[in-house]
Length: 430
Image (tube, rainbow, N blue to C red; front, top):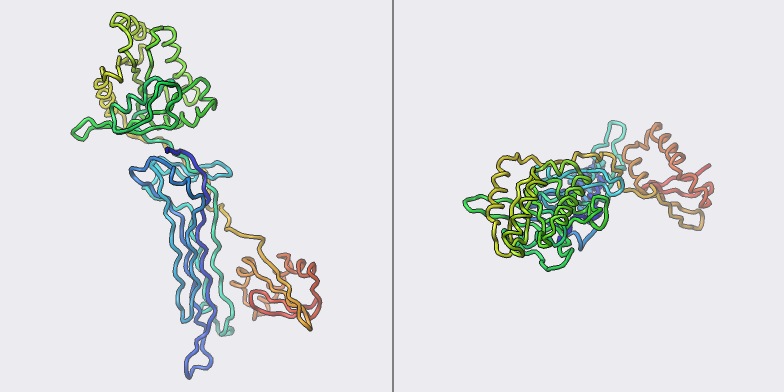
């Protein structure tokens, strides 16, 4: 089934933490720090897959994650980088931020690949923190957190030619006759509920891609039915074939049918009606030659700006002339693709974070022990030298300003209790 819009959640990989360790070698009683760096988290990458023309494969899974980087190891070993996740999309897919609706990237404007979320950088091991005054640093820098984003994938077909017209005008029958497509065809309105793609092969390397756009009803440009969902595909077509059912043989009805479709196109986007439009009057096999001639003469007067083709998708009459002329017109039109500029700043995406810290209380005979963990704590310890007076003062201010001290008091901490922050224990005094 064709799917042209879907919403998914993507997440990059977290960077691996830096490692804390010390050399342990024979005859080297006081080995220096040798904790290695953490690996980089995996990226979320979108790539254009040629030949793919649907987003339906995203129906079965709504969450996609790259893997986390591994923690650094002993002996200066670097943690393994996380694996990227590569998501394949059809050419013409627009990726939007689901919250703001802003365009992140138009995959038609890339070289076929775009990294939406970068993985977190790996943390630095304690081997980097040794100084002349601090030769046994017992801290390392944690890896950067993952980033998560809800995105909307929206496919706007990139077909050379768009087939437009009211429901049951014969567009699907035309597509089936001139291409290798196999659309659903029946004699009742609203048969086509999804756009269909097909390749017209004229031989000797000549041809073009054509899209059957579902029937346009009155009010489509205002969102009635699935109108706007269908009309958006036409924006990228270079030529339009406007299919008209003339089997009613009533000239006023035929004219109104033509005008109603043109109005919806113009109301949705005035640039659409500036494209070359070929008027294909279909089902001529349902009337006599004299009646057909009268109708064609009238249409040539009323719609003098359009070239009119009398065709029958049943017998094939006039079809070859129409598709050959369409190909010739395409050769005169540059293949400039309508692109959507990026509106969303990827740098504004916050790292995926929780409340920042968590405190667990454990009761002991002599005192209570409070264990403080969380990404705020890890980051602070990664760049703070607790063995210096300046660093310890910074640490104390952090405990107050981050809300950790307030939460400790709420949990009933008292003088003499033990506070374990990131693996480092302190005795609490107010």
